[in-house]
Image (cartoon, rainbow, N blue to C red; front, side, top):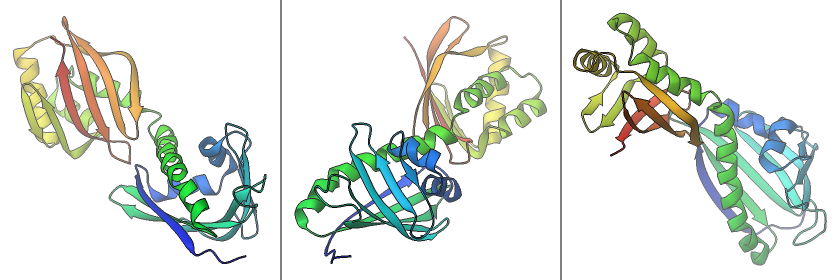
Length: 249
């Protein structure tokens, strides 16, 4: 390969464990979910890397090095030969744990500054898309978790409610609305008990589909003539970290 003296670097946190993130570099179906239908990867040294973008542009290269779930290196270029021939640059992706998620480090080495500059915006976009694609899979059951959250508020027995909450929230869960500033699952359970005492029969239900972006979920709700929206932030293991509630006027 020719010398590649020009580099661009980018880093992003993916809200998923490293082992899950790395699957997108070893399984063609997941690779295609990221890049576009028809894209494939043969995740062995010398294996073919092929990308077919949604607009029909095609890129190709081959795997140079792979060490699951930490690192993959592959060459990259365009089937058309412009702005670089197939295999005309090199991409290195490293994954390291960060909290319950994964920090992705990307280094793209290229032969000239013009090609490097042309790919800065592209990688900004593609890694953002990647974060959403991984999160969409990991949090595919977000609606069911949100429903379980609302259901728990109607459970009368403290122990049963505590168990129900423990299945869906982190021990340090935080809840905020106009009447609550809650820290931790025990405080949350006590707060829901008080709600049942002072608002007997209250029942919250989700209204419409949830809206999800990289671990943050919006869910509209109705309860005893009131309505509003909750903002849920999920941890990478699928449990709720924070909830912020807004009530409509």
